[in-house]
Length: 314
Ligand code: UDP
Ligand code: MG
Image (cartoon, rainbow, N blue to C red):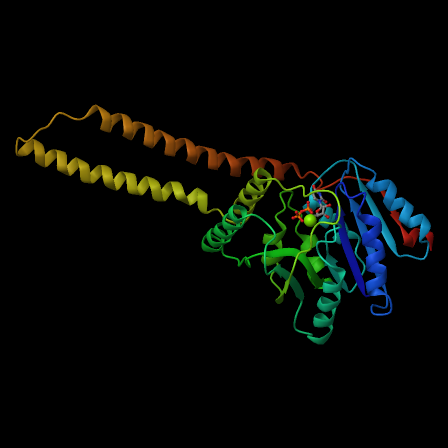
């Protein structure tokens, strides 16, 4: 098997058939053998029925269909797909045709021609989103690159094709809180970036709201850096230093008899500020602690209800 395509699907009933047909057209005669791994991530529409219909209508197609017991998120869907992938190359691609299968051909060509490249990742040259979201994303990458030891490429999506050995390395990472951009960088390997233009979504709508993106960004920080934990040490040190300096000032004032009555406002502001900082720090420690708690339960990353594979039919 040359290529495995992992396609996470969440409410994609109007896209999966077109996606399948487009792949069939694009890959025909160019890629000798490929399999499509559709992971239905707890869709609330007819995605699963449509997938089964594609399977019935195209008995020759190499399809692997995974049905989750509920919505576990795209990251979990990618993980399930990776476990099933049998290809020498593995591609992660969205079902909504925003990421064109033609780009996959280019990725495969690059891998074929360059033995030393392990992964070809696509990044968006121009983002199809509002200025505000775009700005937030830029700041996120700036900040995370500053505080994390690993590199995050600006705008790199998880639309990428990589070799089997990299896929195996990612499957080895069994953490429950998955932030795939971080995981892709963490495992290392030689990654080559190519630009691509995201198309309009074929049908349906994006499942990413601003809050979901924000939560996802926090996930990235918490999963790949412990810098926020160190922050309290820094802030504490600064506050202590300021206190010592102020102490010296007060002692000098006392000795030189320049005592002025301490201000009510100063005290209130300081108390509020310090307790605010302390609560934020407690919250951050709590976030990490919660993650330790969840990870220690060793829950499965996803639960598969059904699995239909062309291999079983053979
Ligand atoms: N997706 C998923 N589970 C989710 C949300 C999304 O499997 O909980 C899939 C979705 O079906 C699509 C891909 O992830 O194939 C990207 O989602 P979407 O198009 O909503 O994101 P965007 O392209 O706007 O970043
Ligand atoms: Mg999309």
